[in-house]
Image (cartoon, rainbow over all chains, first blue to last red; front, side, top):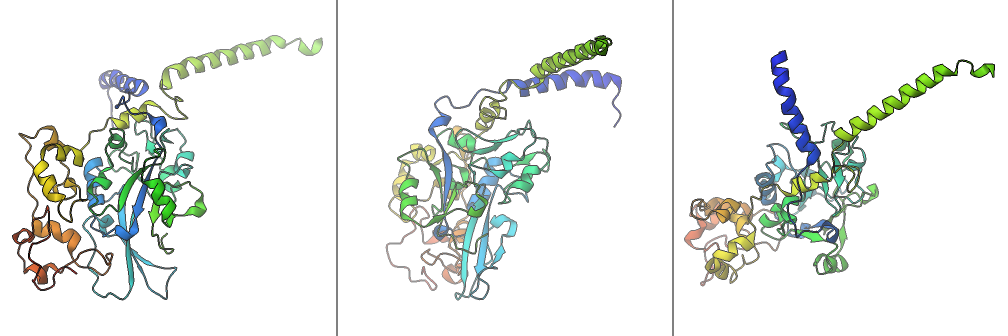
Amino acid sequence: MNISRRKMLILLPAAAVAWESVLAGTPEASPNYKMSDHWWGMLIDISKCIGCGNCVRACQTENDVPDGHFRTWVERYHVDDLHLENPTVISPDGGKEGFPVVKEDAEKYFFVPKMCNHCSDSPCTQVCPVGATFISPDGVVLIDQKYCLGCAYCVQACPYGCRYVHPEKHVADKCTLCYHRITKGLTTACCEACPTGARQLADLKNPNDPIHEFLKTHNVQVLKPQMATGAKAFYNDLDGSVR
Amino acid sequence: MSAFKDARHLFRFAGLFVLAFLIFLVVRHYYVPKSFGQYGHYRGAAIGEIAQLPVKFAGHQACEDCHTDVVAKKNTGKHAHVNCEACHGALASHANDPSTVKPVLPDTSVLCARCHTASAAKPKGFPQVDPVVHSQGLPCETCHNPHSPGMDAPATAAGGAK
């Protein structure tokens, strides 16, 4: 690409103005929202998931997720008695349009919705060389897309495969736990669209949140606890074969 | 003190070093965003920018403020816990401007089948039917009101809800 001196002289002030907006930033959106009052997580109830794909479609609509990439997706596990440790997992187009019908009733099937676990000790934020991804004071793992270089270190670091490089913006992208919604008192798009209540937004700092009672009375696990990520996506009824 | 007779050279180097450091501080002052380090090793203003993104799903509260009749009907049936936008799709545009943005009515033969098509992979307690056997291609709303899908008379069609 050839840039003439004239074009360069026009481009430079424009770039300076753009950079100035990065430097200044914008004020916080919701004046009544106090970050120190919240510690967000998600409760996912596998026994309630029917694999309809509503959450995947809702997420793509709400967050303009590009086709072929997913901030949340649904996997279908098929575990047969002889291969407990090697389940067959499918997720056609992230489960966006549902799953093929299973006729025979004899074997074990279940759906596992996946998303960013919003780890409190997240591997992805630790590897960022420029400080473009971080855990917000209210426990949400976010990306500053104006600051991200698109090096994809974080994509490799996430043990859950929850990050991707945006094909048009060329920066890392991931679930924000609908930060623009939860700071306004709404629930996430996936929770709003889930017809069975298999997903529930949880605020661990809110003593009245039903999550506390649920965690006390159910067999709840997180994914890959051996990675010590401090994951905050809590799975009820999680089968041992889920990876 | 012959060892330090050429110390002047060192002072020049030290001067250059101090100058370079001052330039570094000045450049840093202008190039590091104001809010960097406000909460941690990142740009604090980014949090506010993400929080300002537009909402597309209005949330069930917004629907219930106006459509009280539908909510009352919905609360009588098995879909009481299903949020409006789970079926009707993202409608913040309609909630913000109800007179000009009119939502499209969903096609029940597609919509209902998404959840209620029988599959052995689904949880056993969830009501499921084989749409072909159950309704012979008729749209579900012929018999069921989607807002309160139960029927006064028990379902007699073949392949009824398990």
